[in-house]
Image (cartoon, rainbow, N blue to C red):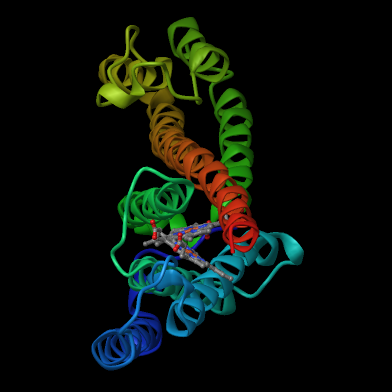
Length: 286
Ligand code: HEM
Ligand code: HEM
């Protein structure tokens, strides 16, 4: 589950960007028209309480509910990746539009109150969303081509198979060869270290990298009858190295996405609570 590299931003020639821009323009025109021609007597109620205020607030709220629905939509069933891409594309652009429409709804009357707190939460969700887009766009494209856990499992299986093949091929080779294989198979860490955020700095050399390096030395010392097998084992180790790197990259990207969603989602929920309180409170103080 996930979205394809970047293409959700361009989805169907920016269909949802256009829709979002049109929606915001319409709201701005309606607001400016109403504010200048119909909003004579403010009374005790702020701009949000005028009929145009209600209209804009209701549109913003409907959009928030729809934006939340993405969480349900993602998990409902295995949605086709194209339709999911469209959903995320719409989510991103309409999410930003929601904030602008909510600001128009407030009539720019902000203060230290629950109403403005609601707006701040909305802004926080939108800003976290924009940050999330940067996180997604940085996910390596070759990884998102074969999305998420499926490709991870494939890679792990591939590594296990390579290990079995290497052990078999190395049977008649020296102990040095074999212990390199065993170390690579047993001690290679796939999950990232705590230093991953610092550019993948590792305290100990990766046993798979060590095997690749040392085998190059061992290969040169092999007797003629062992050279073919030695090369075969070496090339299996090279494949192992590639697969290990791909696994690490994938785990790191998945972790980053998960960390980000751990902000975006709870803030969305806080927003809903505050929004409900905002709506209830304006009707109580009517
Ligand atoms: C995302 C949705 C919404 C956000 C972020 C939001 C935020 C705000 C903000 C910042 C204000 C200005 C506060 C002030 O005047 O001091 C406001 C005013 C108001 N909002 Fe909302 N609002 C939303 C939706 C709604 C909805 C759906 C309704 C009604 C059904 C509503 C009713 C009102 C009313 C009546 C006011 C005027 C309050 C007053 O004069 O004290 N809002 N809103
Ligand atoms: C009121 C505004 C918003 C709300 C309530 C909201 C809510 C949500 C929810 C509930 C999810 C599903 C997360 C999950 O269940 O895994 C989600 C995902 C996401 N949101 Fe938002 N969001 C909002 C605005 C935005 C904005 C403005 C952006 C970007 C500019 C954005 C970007 C994303 C992205 C990239 C995902 C991940 C999609 C995926 O995993 O395929 N969101 N959001």
